[in-house]
Image: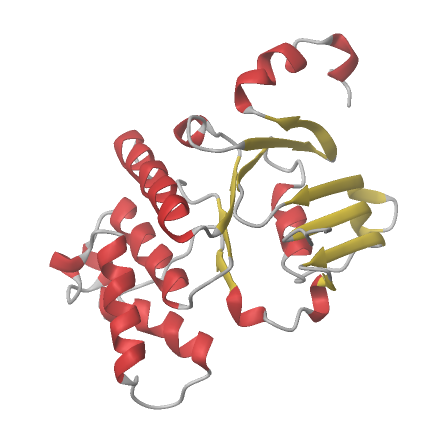
Length: 241
């Protein structure tokens, strides 16, 4: 019996302007429940790739599928959790951690007005999963960068996602918080079985947790266990891939 992958890209090309391709002939399959790091240099196409995965951009050629459906027409869009680059409220927004996480539940359930009891339970559960119970009613702006990122992950979790995409989640976060965040994602992956795409120009913090590393430089130049990367990366045949 053929199992439909969570993500399937086939021969995808994409460019923001004619003659300037950001991605070229990209094929990628991610099985449901995998924890995958997508790495590469700034400008290498990582963010564009995940935007195509999520159906936010459409390929110039090739196909992008989510659970067998065209990504841009995916019928269960509310099951996609996306932590975009530099997620922040900005300025002096007074929202508390609980309010930020609750917004994720509202978006998922399509609710207007107060949360129902089950929704409140899911919000509290998401806050607990990321270890922010003690600061649940504190303004988000008063927390460290690492704790703010945990709050945004909890916001995504409140929507009960089947796929969780985190784009550069450790930007501006100290090394200790990066390690802590990576361990948190590993635990969430084990407990929830959610498919995780972790996108970053560096992958050191998650290297020991992810099952696969996909290295993107316009095309995919490596796809496999992180421990195998040095052998491939020093192979001259890959130098200009």
